[in-house]
Image 1 (cartoon, rainbow, N blue to C red):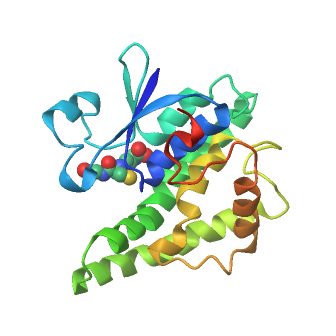
Image 2: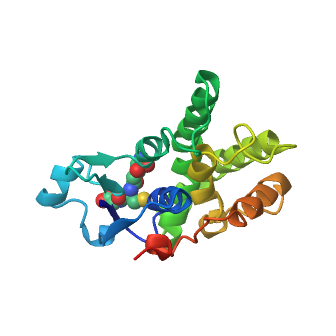
Length: 206
Ligand SMILES: N[C@@H](CCC(=O)N[C@@H](CS)C(=O)NCC(=O)O)C(=O)O
């Protein structure tokens, strides 16, 4: 069986849990205490030399790191990946957008606000992340105007990759009320069959 090394509050990990839930794939789960260096031990670094969760362990013992690479692996050949080179490239486009223009501002602000003590330096750091985060939300909002999903007519891993940290953007100090299309898209995704909440580890699987 697959095994996911993860931390329950991680949006990067939640992407993988959400994709597994939509695909109906059972998995075993190991919570890693990343706040106490659990992903930096010699043993964990053998699984991911970059010292971060999520890591997916395949049945043959192979370890895959990087949430969006794991999503790509899980979705290939399933209903979570559209068909056609352009559509697959569009999915990648949104997943690279997530990693370069969204996660470094919205996810990291959430982490800093939830897990670090407020200091002047932290306030300045959060301030620097604010405008790029707002820009990313505006890009998403503009793209979603008139669209149910990010790519094509069906849920794909592009939606899953961007849902994870957008739906908790408020925890990073980003108010979603100006982004009506984003809010509508989030509500639509949360209502889909197979959806699980962030803290629903194993998604009802045994
Ligand atoms: N680009 C990576 C980012 C992974 C990442 O930042 N993981 C964080 C938790 S969300 C982590 O493991 N932090 C612990 C550490 O850096 O020691 C991905 O998408 O998987």
